[in-house]
Length: 456
Ligand code: NAD
Image (cartoon, rainbow, N blue to C red; front, side, top):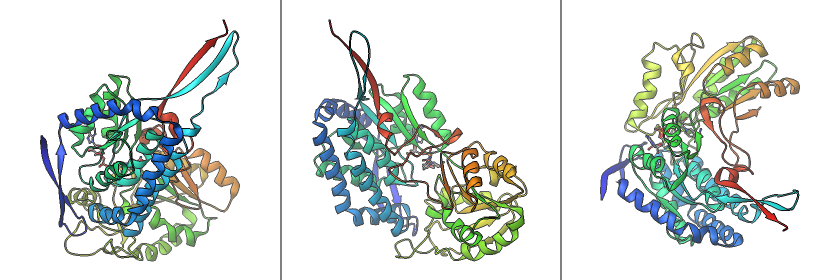
């Protein structure tokens, strides 16, 4: 029994791509019941066999990489280059964690009177709730390590972007994962997502999305002491010192914030520039911003596509048009249909301005000057968030001091890279709880069991 139907629109054209049935609580409960039932089969597989199935799933993704990428261009307006990277990331995350079942080792701890060992036990059913901004990678960062650790998974894509997740669910079955091990359930957050929180058989919820909904999930999880991982919002700083390669810092700054039209939790949306080079930096930034290719996302050299929806367009516009904000300069964007918004650089009056403090989640970046290291640290940390950030300097000592002082989970020095599947990802403060990816991700999907074997 389907509660509602969602019309998936192409954000670049506003054309209807497809309709998708949004499921209700009954179907959600049925999928959870299947995931419970098949749990012993999945965790009972020999570790090498579970790994082999995950590699086959990764291979199936690779075999359909272009199809998945095209689907994401149509559904989310991602540039074709980004969408190919995203599908490739799903393959890589599956491949990386396919080696994990055979390496899920415990400890043998010296004790008197016997032998003590630990086991990394799967949790059971894991519920994964995905936002619309990176539908494929964020899904895989949850389901790949969860499955590798022996859990079964129910996954809810965002209402706006269900298509690639649905296809990944089909590819998992084609690859030979037993039915019920990985089920994709398109539905409303307040229905399906909320059911993951309240259903006692779902032992963990991995949520990526807004801080407000993350807080709601954390409150709800308390009732059952349910395990959670939260990846939430961000308002990250890009800190540019006078001793940096200023040309490179300015040239790369747009790509640190306008990627995915700024709908990126890691967007470096607050640029802090040392006062002595502030004017020169803005001079260099202007052509870099105006050079960003904001064109039809399926075009091979497109660098930025549209926003995801009319709502998101209205939200982003309200930050710039609504608050008498000082716009320094803008890039270009196509006219006509589609939720297009040009790359925009604004100059706030102070760190108290709304646009400096709140996550816009669009292609808008604010620039402010700072005086010295202490001022840069104070301004960078003057936020409730702490997800990522960049530091531009040629002074190694300063790079070390700054990278220890900035309160954020993912920093890069002289680059804007945030995410590699082999390194941990997650936020400080209100940007989240727990870490995804990297060598330790499986510990977020297992319980440590300690067993003592008596010699007697
Ligand atoms: P959102 O919080 O509105 O929705 C995220 C997901 O949660 C969707 O699938 C939605 O259906 C579901 N949801 C909504 N209400 C729910 C409820 N009451 N119970 C359970 N699930 C519910 O966020 P969004 O607008 O889709 O995504 C944008 C936000 O995500 C931004 O704030 C962004 O910073 C954040 N984000 C964070 C990361 C990260 O890794 N830290 C990555 C991507 C996006």
